[in-house]
Length: 311
Image (cartoon, rainbow, N blue to C red):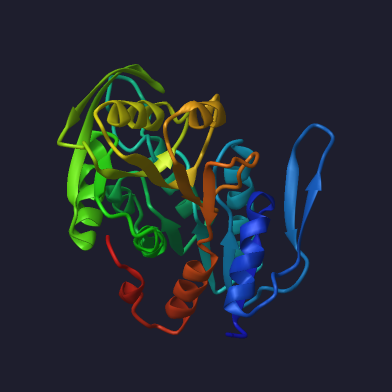
């Protein structure tokens, strides 16, 4: 425990912040949120942060109020003379907008990076960005953590005899390949084409799945359409079982329905985003201990690379 370190939470991630603070060995700092009748809100620290290293834990999943609350808390800490302001963002929203993939669109991830910098953040700690290069959008340190250190021990504990890793699309092939190398397994890849966002038009399987226990790997699951389609296709091709590990459980639209109706045996996610409801097919692993260890390492000037199994 470091007396200079003060840990605070935004309202959307308090469930996780309490677990991180407990693992770190320190109580959460006191912060209040004043809400006006028109929907405007104002966060306020209820204790001094002058000269302190302030950590603000808040994932930026929808609604956008979660992002703006984080920005206001950063600004408030800056104006209260905090020494360092570290934004702990377990799920970094708008990360899918990391490039101009068509004319006349915004690069949302870069805009969010600019907003965090302008507000006064001096460091970011986050997990499984949708694209690694988003780290380059910041002009200050970014500690990019990987959920592999949580998922891999769980996968190994399943003792699946014919384990094969799988990528649900070409973009996830690097991540799936890293898991496959560590676990010394084969890999298969799904090639998909979208007609529009969240709608998969067609999907082709590259690789052999017959008699295999398939483990799909992705950074997030949104509507669940891709994973459901991939699982059903693999089972039709003779797969013995299909599971999936996804760091961020966005789970919007008909996601829960898609998962329940799919051939997935199990979906393993983390608690970077809270589940909207329980599901017999969804297992949640906590990232709290990992974030607490990294926070301790950052403030004691120790390497954090020992926390990475696969990157």
